[in-house]
Amino acid sequence: MKDSEFIRGDVPMTKEEIRTIALSKLELSTHDSLMDIGAGTGSVSIEAALQLTKGNVLAIEHKKEAVDLILENKEKHHTNNLEVVMAKAPDGMENIAEYNKFFIGGSGGNLNDILELIKNKAPQKSIVVVTAIVLDTMIEVYHFFKDNNYDFELIQVGVNKIDTTKKVAMLTAQNPIFILTGKVK
Image (cartoon, rainbow, N blue to C red):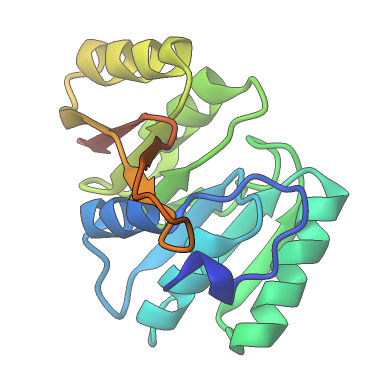
């Protein structure tokens, strides 16, 4: 989906190129259940909900402005299989055993607690995808996956865009993003 299809505001959003890769890394099938932690505008939640025709999505977000945007985007895209919870994870993750896919786009400083809960309560072979713009976050997830013997990968993605409305074509760099994908054993 194009970024322009989402109602925005000043809330962070996983951009379409990164969202496409992250959703691919989640290996979604129609019956899966996804927990989107730190859901922001809900772009990952919405796009996943449209794919999970027999599954469901839980978006967890603690900022009211973001929750309001997720609800607006939910209504706009008619995603009735999307539930939105206003909480700061790991709060809101009580039914974790019912989910087999996890996307972490924000952790509110509770990343280790969130990863520990997923490791201890999620079904085996669940997939966890974390996007990180900050090196410290990437390093924390890398060490968590490594220390817990996850099968995992780490990629770094850089996207450059050309503003086609300008007279001269010049690449404008977007922030590089780390994408870590791990499988719960």
